[in-house]
Amino acid sequence: LIQSNDLKVDESSLTGESDLIRKSFDHDPVLLSGTHAMEGSGRFLITAVGLNSHPSKLSVVNGLPPCENKKEAEPVVILEDESKGKSVLQAKLSSSIVAAATVLILIIRYCITHYAVNHESFKTSDLAYFVNFIIIGVTVLVIAVPEGLPLAITLALTYSVKKMMKDNNLVRHLDACETMGNATAICSDKTGTLTTNRMTCVQSYINGSFYKTQSPSYELLDGNTRERLVECVCINSGYSSQVYTFNSSRKSMMTVIRLPNDVFRVYSKGASEIILTRCSYIFGDAGTIQNFNFGRVAELTKNVIEPMASDGLRTIGLAYKDMVPKGTKTEANQVEYNHEIDWDDEEVVRNGMTLIAIMGIQDPVRPEVPAAIEKCQRAGITVRMVTGDNINTARSIATACGILKPGSDFLALEGKDFNARIRDENGKVSQEKLDSIWPRLRVLARAHPCDKYVLVKGIIDSKGIAGTDVAKEASDIILTDDNFTSIVKAVMWGRNVYDSISKFLQFQLTVNVVAVTIAFVGACAISDSPLKVWHLTSE
Image 1 (cartoon, one colour):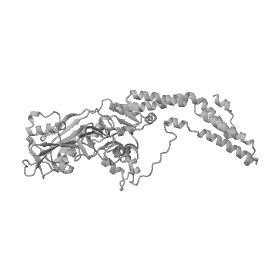
Image 2 (image 1 turned 90 degrees about the vertical axis):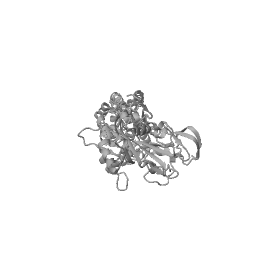
Image 3 (image 1 turned 60 degrees about the horizontal axis):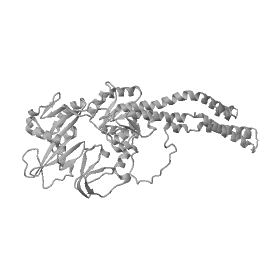
Image 4 (image 1 turned 30 degrees about the vertical axis):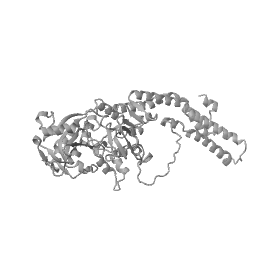
């Protein structure tokens, strides 16, 4: 971005966040391909297109194998796939192995008998035998697959797709029905899919007190704490000088507002363990400002954060920081700056904060999810949770859903621990190590997109509607209600395709198998088929 006038951009197609992002020459000047300018105007210089654009890089993570080495890209050669546009079953129907084997056996047996054993020379009349062998092979090919089977498969797939749409499954590729019918493992996100995605604050830690069963009284909090707490929660709706948006690397967001006398106040909220590491002070009893060291971090983690997470709560930390001009510092937790603040130096902006509170937010499990997961397990399908949440929160929700069971030896790992266990000394994924981990892995917490790719090893066929547009482009089925039970329905209708075809084959293959067997055995035994063309085609 080289020039802008109050430019705001919608990046929800990439991040899933609906909030507009302010862009300016000196603050967040990068515009991403596929985003939309919603307010203001501006001029920009294009620096990357095509495969080098941000959406393409995300597409690689979602749907294509990552590059192991960063060599110069070679020219891409597009090859036509003969089976493109066909489902798995339809592609199998085009197999001509039996017919080819029949023709080959007939020709080989004839040649050995007449030319090798009887020492006869080749005659023009022998061509009639070879033509007859080919006719028999083509006939076997015709009757090997019942004439109604391709139509039966198409009807079964179409029927299942229609039923899946009513069950909130939007099928983008027809062969996804068969894929779901063969599914043996489902990797699901937590928020919104296994849970209701309706957040309610049920526990809190404020002014040195842990409110576990009841909310703190607003009147009992000191004025300083009340003011900071209310502003920290509500500041997103007001004017801000600077915004550091939430992303998977920050695990938090920061908003900067300008106060009188050139004072800048930074409010931050995000994952509690991340916020704690950035704080140097804390609001203690009666709102007094106290030093916050590593010992206090460990104490709060053990006595507050872990109990909240064990109850299945998402823990959010709230903190702030006042940045004042040099020589005007009046409080211990204020930070002085010279002349101007370098907002691009995020380390300076986010460190030295004062912890206001820790909130425990409840996201209840969908009532229908435990029964759906149990149904999957009875059907031989392993359900795994892959989430970006805290490991204790993820473990608690997984236990409530039935993914983890008491007394089992299943694993619940964080992304960094998962990578440490599956990678060799060179940082590459070891298939042997991965094979020793994934059968027992049930929960992967604090997971990044690349962790999900390594675990799933391919395109995830089912994505929630809350996912980004890039994720949907890589998916075969989209859940329009973002509900785990819809995945169970997709598996059910996928298996229905095979059940329907099996019922059809019970009636069709009785005669066909007998006819093909007689023709094939006859070709091997007497160099001719006991059943002629008119016999076979009349079946």
